[in-house]
Length: 170
Picture (cartoon, rainbow, N blue to C red):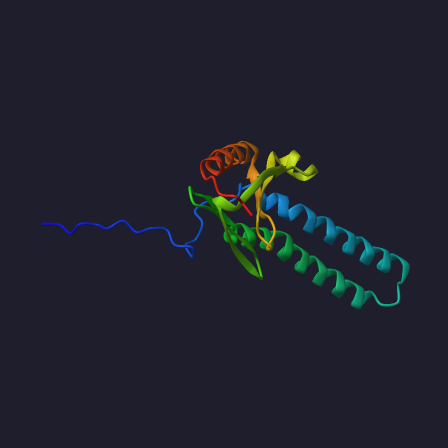
């Protein structure tokens, strides 16, 4: 005789189930790479314009390249490992960040608007950010770096779920 399993309900502190698109790593790496390219260009200009400190210049350039490579490769992977989101019949759950992590829960009854945003890099990579505006002093809940189709489905689902919850959202 087996034991009966009692279903466990989701708690507010549970980890949201879904990750952003795998292309989020590229989305987050490109701005970091651009920033480091500017620093490297400045160091190359320094090397070309001042020939008196070659040892220090070379060491600075090598350190910059090592730190830049670690940042451009590591930070997007770390952010991708942390970022999560989920939409249920009761709430929108998100977890974002990399050094400082923030978990947000927005009850469906508090949803006022659901929007998408697609910057130039997001359009290039086929991604979108879904923004859920709520009646909260903490501001909108953002779900970044979703595949465009997933973002559109999420907006449609949130709109339908919010319509069934006749709260006043204030």
